[in-house]
Length: 479
Image (tube, rainbow, N blue to C red; front, side):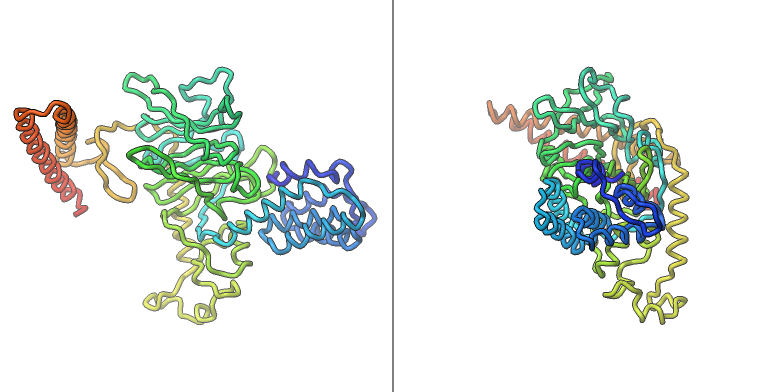
């Protein structure tokens, strides 16, 4: 059931009284039954014909339904036309306009803004899963962290409403979850550190503006800790729970204004979660955008590069890719389409075997994504946090955390030496900072001399670490 059904359709008087649509075959069809037809595969066209017939007879509620169905198809000009006609027909019949139309038209305006910037995205796999336990089906490697049932986190739960899912970082030292804020009554996202003795630091509540006046739930934090993904039904959403992204300063921890991730991530169905696997260059998102049983949702696996590229194509091509009726529609690069959304004639006539001319082979693209999806399915979720003694970057979201992450004895020895030197370096940096602080209060020539010596030691230690990393990278073949 989509968010339009949840928020709007159940409020409309026509559901309670239900106007009747004539099917032309002797049996009347209730409007809500006709809507169910729309969400049944292969019956969308028939349901729209039924609504159209009643609209022509002057039924305002039929125009309202057509507006809603147009919204679900991202046909905003048609939706605006039907909503306007709904108001006109209600006025003509001297009937009261349902106040819900204000919310629907607001969702339409927001949708039009997002539709202007539909993101080019290759969706490589989809699976229908149980709504209550969808997080168990995420094939995330350890480097991406873990999405868990929030009720399993070591947090205070008595008398407090907790959001569905929580997040645990790769090392297990950061957890995030959502809970009801007693003051506002809204769901807010909280963060805490797991201390060395296993206890939690005092939870920190993220800024209220992340929810834009609504709830904020189901957090997921990027591997570097600077980007938070979550879902919110506040201002700026398309009508229900949308996926938002908020970045924060790594030094101060302060969040910037959140951004709606737009279409196709968001829809007029509720979104549940977005999680990024930087190690494999993919991401997951959960949604109920397609008509499914109330206890089911869809998990999409998509290619993730971190770079945003908007679709430059016809509205119909953008609608096709936004609806995700067939994920293979997203596999061909959008540049392979002309202004009318069809493949360019030059591409059709090109010799696809001539790779020097940059020809695109659809079968090669299909094999690529099918192979990637097969590899991701092999990932076993729910692994325990690995030993983390350092964080040596390898690129593409990968790191060395301890000697366990390398194979050769020489490499293991280099990592162990780096761990020791890094600890010593951090200790000297801390001591130097304390001496500088003391010097600012009670400066003396003796302390100044000690600071000079300490600065040279820190500089020397840093140079040793750089040289050590260089030797390690060479042994790994990354230089």
